[in-house]
Length: 198
Ligand code: ZN
Image 1 (cartoon, rainbow, N blue to C red):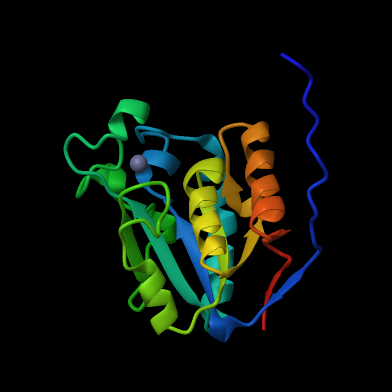
Image 2 (tube, protein in one colour):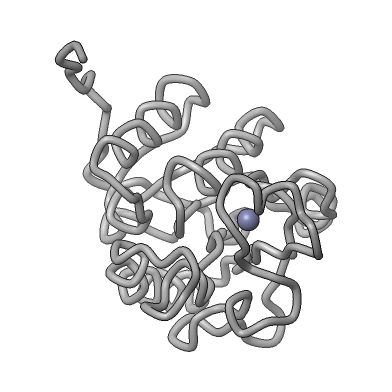
């Protein structure tokens, strides 16, 4: 294998977000991904949970919308051939972890594929709510986070990704996700503390 260098990924110390026109999108923080007993547990997702909890609290206080995505598969989902069974509709594994439980008024989007816009009402809901900027956090960084952030970028939402609030399986995957967010979709990368709701 050739040695691969990670290109420079632009990062900003802070990014101001107009809370009234923004949503914090919490991707797939479900037992199967973020709990040690989950089918596809990744330790980084568990690490990111308290970081995301603090962001949720700040977003709520500022009046931003909170949108949760939930991977949600029926019997014989073709994705099971790639990953094995996970996030089966209605099971414990598909539940959002206790520390990040949605509250009344939050949006919860049950998604079929990596991309939370695919086959769901997410785009419609965001437009109805007047949301044009998305802060995308959660797991897995280069899979459902990236596909959802990318799909948002393709729909002309502004996207912001706090690097410490996304969870990857490897450092390479983490860097690859941020590279695509910035280079391909024109998104901005900062830290969770750098997200400033105004
Ligand atoms: Zn899945």
